[in-house]
Length: 245
Image (cartoon, rainbow, N blue to C red; front, side):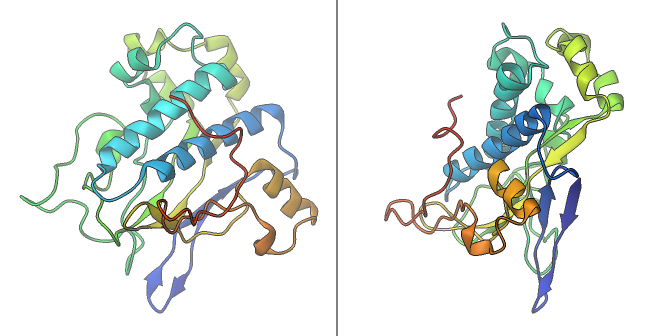
């Protein structure tokens, strides 16, 4: 299941996407895809701070997704380099939308593209769906929502160059899979971000909530930043200690 939802508080919007197994227990393939999306999201969160380009964060999520789809999920050729796949935009076949958007009084808030004041909208597939390409500034509020989808129509439109990287036989295992997206709302701080979303995010937390072993949000693993330099990040499951790309 993929639920894209939110609530309003004093007219301010939230936007949260949760993906979870209907059975309450991840299969190995579901876990591999889910953790790939989570690692892409956390890599972006680790890198976000004032002065960083949002387009660069989109590219970072693409790099993590490509590496995981190659090394863990197995739908991309093992001998393919991330750089070669980035060059022909393979990741856009699996994540067609932009990484996230400004959020505030509207779910998709204003200010993404302002003529003569912000970077223009890119034209490349995937990138053109970015709702902003702005340079991050302190106190900006955005969603971070990478995803991986197995969409037959999108994959059928792959270029000749892109098809060279696909493992067709392995892709057949995901014909009815659908997709995974994880979306949190964050605020850019002086040295990083603060994550405003407190949902089950790790595989173990999702399964524990669905089985009733976790009944309080305070018991959930958190990726919760206040000030990177001050070392105020709360401890959390790092899925192996981080991402190397």
